[in-house]
Image (cartoon, rainbow, N blue to C red):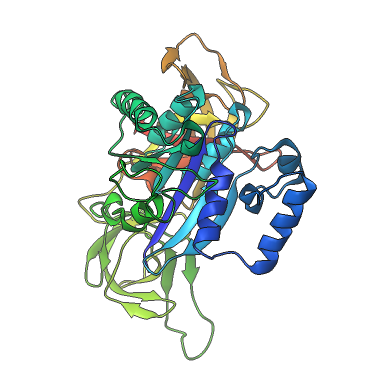
Length: 416
């Protein structure tokens, strides 16, 4: 069954967690004991209704403050599709969490409070969604019940958001009026808004086309693990396991292994369920080659005339995720696909104000949650593509070697 990963974003108290709770509730994905626990917690908090936001806001601090702090992942399915939801925080100080949740999403839902319209955080999250190259954007105009389901309010927000989106790169924009609390236009079309002729939110999620969003042209297969069974029965077996990051792999295809540059052909492709004729993103497979080459973790299998250029000079947009500022000269570890290296920050070109899109070229450091353009020099070549072309081979993380903590997430703009 097809899988859709989507993230929710928006300002504080726009109803992200309530929306997800409503989706889980209306698709009958939650158990009776979960619902009873939420009802009991709602009563203890003094609410005269079932607070569905408590299905996702599981941390004590989140419930006490009525906000989302960490990324909460939830899973549900309908007869048409499986879903993985990332409920991301709305506070500015949790921008790093929002970036983490949206980085693997096929679609993002930005909620807007119908009473307040577009606010700074709405623009901020819309920009971050486009920076992360999320292909599909849904603007959910929430709390329509609090503005008497007025068509004029919806159209004003729709037009304002559409005008703002023209400044960004938004391939697919859909605007839906909803009430997460009452369930209007969530699973079924709402009778309270007969003037709205578009789909319900769930109908859109079930039918949005995502297969063509993945790069099926550039073959990229980062080797994660070499499989050499020691049993007598399989002593001749040698396969290379990993996740297809781009293109389509087929038995008989001519391929080249980086960094060695040796060429060979694909002998076969195996999965947990047996051999397959072809593999494409995001399948996890084991590739067998016709020749016995020296291939190890971190190597890249690709096509001879369509290979990434190995590079040690990386130009990237970086979201900084820790309290210690990022400055030129800082040394870090970099993790790119299955390959690791050490890196030094050669230059901070500018810090980006994601609210105004202004570039501060005088900036000398990036603080927690800042985003800026950085030039890195790595100790070993990385096999990279631009992030706009391939999110899997165009993204990386930065790690503090002293603590082994992830301190930054990068999106490659170019390389030399």
